[in-house]
Image (cartoon, rainbow, N blue to C red):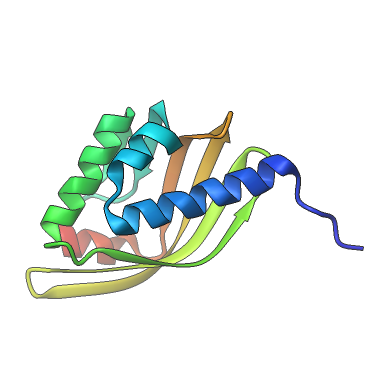
Length: 137
């Protein structure tokens, strides 16, 4: 018999889905004000100018704005699925972007930790970090 998801898991899945919808439509205020913990930590892998650990909602939002600027607004995400538990949600997705005549379409996993309905820490796990580095370097 299949086990049903807990209320927290369902809440975390819904929050991450809502976050992706807000990101895709440029509703960064919703992310900052409703979904992100004020002390969120966002880990972006690689060795490019957009890599690093961003601490605090404003720093995370600023990294999103810079990504949009660097790609002239072409950065998009196609979410394939979102899985969740009491403390986490994981998005399986494909990111695409164009920059300086280069383009990518790369699968990735986005692991998110939630506490009290807010996203507190996030890790982006790219399939090919070198390809992402090449786009942004």
